[in-house]
Length: 207
Image (cartoon, rainbow, N blue to C red):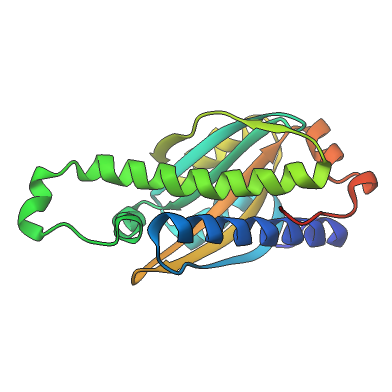
């Protein structure tokens, strides 16, 4: 499903492409491996449609990292992926799987939460930086919070009282691991109006 207005889609696609380039560079520096990061078309969707997209693409059980936004934009940014891909994410970020005999001694859930938080923090900060640069304004982010839930509960956590979500599919490939997820952005009405204002019609390049 496309956004209501094609100029909005062009803007979101451009901003997310900038964010993806910055995130890939940051991840490459962190793990020392090439990261293939691609962004799908960005959609502005009502909540019910966003729930369907998440369920169809990621399944019934999701892992989530979310951050509150304040300053020039007010709302919530989040990254969601299939919960079953959490182990792949650990492999991608630490470049190795623990030996099978040692896995029972490791806090695997803790490793997964840490990996989700790390990746989500990079993706979301890159996205927020692109938005802030576009607006020539400062956007503050709160501490990342990792959670799990269904597409319905995840959408409710992110959207709060907002009626629409900006949704972008993202794919990462590195260290033989494949990660597919979605970046979600829920903004209040004033923030959405500000973001789509013709006054901010040109997105600048990231430094």
